[in-house]
Amino acid sequence: MPVTITFLGAAEGVTGSRHLLDVDGTRILVDCGLFQGKRDWSRLKNAKFPIDPSSVHNVVLTHGHIDHSGALPVLCRDGFSGHIYCTAATADLAKILLRDSGNIQESDARYLNHRLAKEAKRRGQPPPKETFEPLYTIEDAERCDRYFHSVPYREDTKIGPGISMYLTDQGHIIGSAAATITIQRGDETLRVCFSGDRGRKDMPILRDPQPYPDCDLLLTESTYGNRRHEPLGEMESSLEAIVKKTMQKKGRLIIPAFSVGRTQNILYHLRRLQLANRLPRIEIFVDSPLSTKATKVYAEHPECYDRETRELLTGDDNPFHFPGLRYVESVEESMELNDHPGPCIILSASGMCEAGRILHHLKHSVSSPRNTILIVGYMAKHTLGRRLRERPEKVRIFGRYHPLEAEVVTLNGLSAHGDRDDIIQSAAHLKGKVRTILLIHGEREQSEPLREALLAEGHPDVRIAELDQTVELAK
Image (cartoon, rainbow, N blue to C red):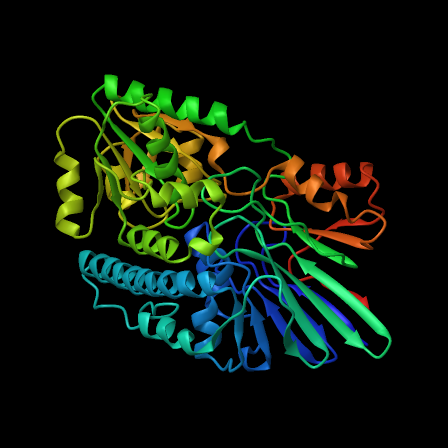
């Protein structure tokens, strides 16, 4: 049975997750994400889908983050007619995330066309004949809804002739899953496990990641393959100190945060610190309509919570709704925050500072030493978030440079990705069973040391996947 896998994204990098499994001509696409990072590069990578969408029979979606789901509107618009298999929580999240992404695509196209027209006028030239088209529209995103097919965790689901799928909770964001695909041809059985994004043990809100089922091939993420996160207790103490220092300076604490997962976790920790009397009351603004919608999805799926969170939600200590917390809806309310008197905390998206309201808050905050920019997650190369983390003398926002006078602090302990030890431990029970481990979703400086560590642990064949590479799994 000829079986191949082609890495169409998230190989030697962390965005654009797209892995094509071909079983005797039946094509299963595991994740369908957008490339993110340098604007021109990512626009080029996203502009044309690398395969004919109509040739894909079904999609398996491990979770809703845009780097895993964001190209689905292109796929569905251009000929895909199968099912998108995922958990119910992932389907609910993806629907709102894709609409938001469609809105961003439309806004980006309008901005670029306005800039071209303005430049032509400045030069005394007629408006350009060629204009930018959005990668996809809100309408394209809405078209995806009909293809979602929700399945529960830990239940075999047929997704093709002789092909079944089994989802296990990954604890990364709500609804996240590892997908183990079993291929049966006569007496031959092949099991391929895709990790998706693996979460961490003992993190708030969600259940711990579940063990991978036995498999012949494991494709595991390697985002933090060469890093160890600080313990949660130390992270909370660091967060406490950062908030207090910013309050003493009477400044703003600006937190770029992914709308899904990171925002909810930060609120959880801030509320815990308040309940423990370690933080005074401070106004906290969640300035992202998408974060507000995502938090509602979290509230609608308590089946994904851990026991502590379920108990919190039955009492008066709801971490998503408490005194001093305000969800900002309108653009006018968002703009008013720029003149807010006194110290406050502003959480806003996008997490990598590439789009959204966070850019306006950074524009009005980066040049004051009273303010603090708190980096709480992974920042891909060529993003504004990565540049802020590297603390240059000035940063470019909306085409203009601003001196970087605000304090920039990185807090790694909040990451929803497992670290080096988590990844190694997640594969430990597969020793002697898994034939090959392929490292995906990681830059080389993270995946190379992880490969050496896994080999040292006794795994016989560990490789780093390469972009556009096709690997033969069975003949």
